[in-house]
Length: 177
Image (cartoon, rainbow, N blue to C red; front, side, top):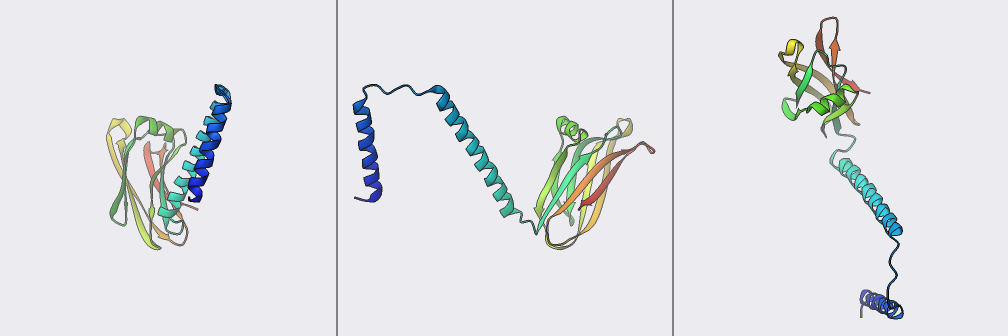
């Protein structure tokens, strides 16, 4: 008999003996059971978070990682609909924003548009912004950045802000340090 089978047989014997001595099992305390379920749920959420972080570290190592974020300031002269992103002439991301997401950007939120791997060297990033501009006209503008990727992660921000003096939106692409 293997060790596992012996262990199972012992547990079966103990369980049988426990039920044989008490004719009716006591009703479990509902609060204790609820607390156990909540503890288990918290542990599962923590494990899921750790697995997600491990997956990102494996798929996008820090020494080759590039991340592109979108942010907005005010938004009186531009209503964002979508952003298209190309990196070294290849399309890498397209995103269509909902009204709720645009509201979150107006409130100071930042959206991660792209996360990928990139070799060290010089690269060109081009972002095309589509939306409604001044006087509710369709508006399509581009912004670009040529940057040098070294060792370590690279973070780039696509910032949309209002330029009150010209009553036009301004699109900036800048590196985060």
